Length: 150
Image (cartoon, rainbow, N blue to C red; front, side, top):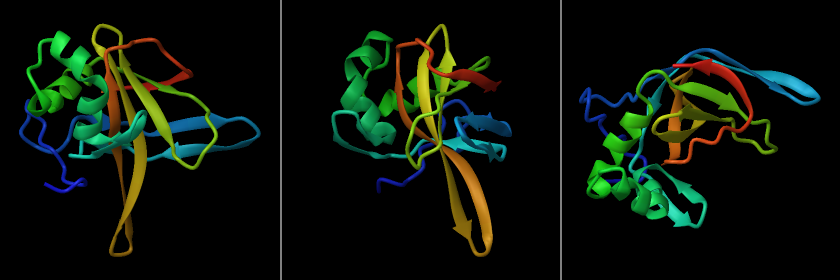
């Protein structure tokens, strides 16, 4: 599988791990970012090093001890781990951090946090948005302000 291969949600057997609604993300001294409602996708991904990477491979490399402690056996269970965190209700937090990437933290207080990055791909002349899972972990400390829920 390639790094950008979408992984199936084990609960639904499709590529969506939920939907993030339209969000208005306020930024200091700048215009707000308005994102469209879009599905959440988990990709096979790649781990580049400490705190660098995305998707299944990065999540497993960074958080395998806590994933196993949560009752999941191996890297093949990362999609189930992510799906468990993204179950309803999940609050979305926006931390106004410098940089070109738009990210929100999806936090389910009982189970963990998933970091999502807003991506728009061009299909023909149409921009198609989705939220890509960057990482997932058991810590539920919140950062930023609540901007929505799913």
